[in-house]
Length: 345
Image (cartoon, rainbow, N blue to C red; front, side, top):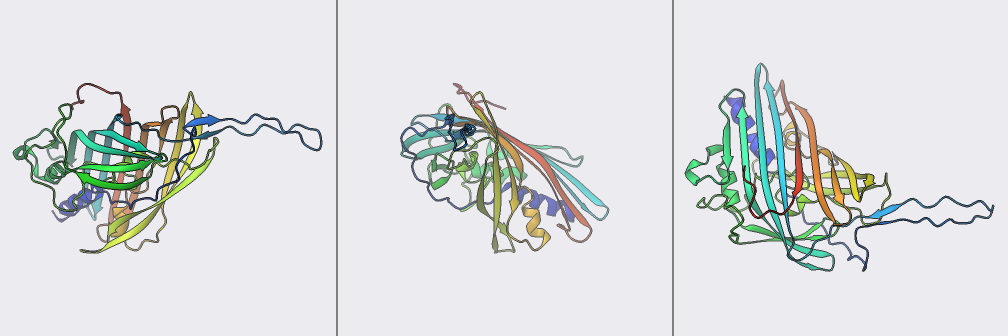
């Protein structure tokens, strides 16, 4: 019974992804410097009279947003959390599907202003051989299972408004009251408001912070890169160090441009913890913080069309002596084509 309670609390804390701080704004792009390939094929004469090889082809990678534009992303995540304490073992499998709509209200220089709304959220959880528990954002308050009530409350909160640069840095954020839209399904019509500071566990993106609306994008390089070129991102997450103690942890993410085919750039990435960690309890909270994966960027449209996260981590001693905690799973995010009606589960 004790293992069941501890694992349930840990699973919910993993879904409440810590928030990364705002990133500094980058310098605006020069006119005409949109996402495009830049190829240098000039042959340079040398003193020996032998022509030098042409310079490698490079690409300038940028997101492009336009006022009135609406982007819809579908996210699917599956996570298996296995815990063993002595002879007691517990397996917790959770699934999440959600559709989010991002609306671009204005673009000024290098900054674009967007808002985000959930169209549809579905969550499913099964512990060992117990009956599965399911949540749908269309449920009425009395129908929501107890384990998902915080999710329903969070979906009832304000619609986030944020600004993002052309390389994917969120530089400002605020909240405004959610405005009803005929084409957007209302998550939980009469659920109570979320508590102050409560994070949405439905937004489970394992980037710099799931509660950061800008986390639906990956960081792009500031300068043109060729195939095989790399760039890095360092950000901070918060973990619980005690009842009222929050500890900052630095995460390093390294990106690599693998290829460009038919105008689609494929980028891979890997993550690592930079801060020295003490204690298995802290490490267990970071079990999803260092995924590897890849994403595809449409260079002409300046849009991320697909992304995948993968993780497989094990922490020994997280739940006490002779305990093992393991987590493995994946998440995919795909850009959906515009539709007159939101997609339902």
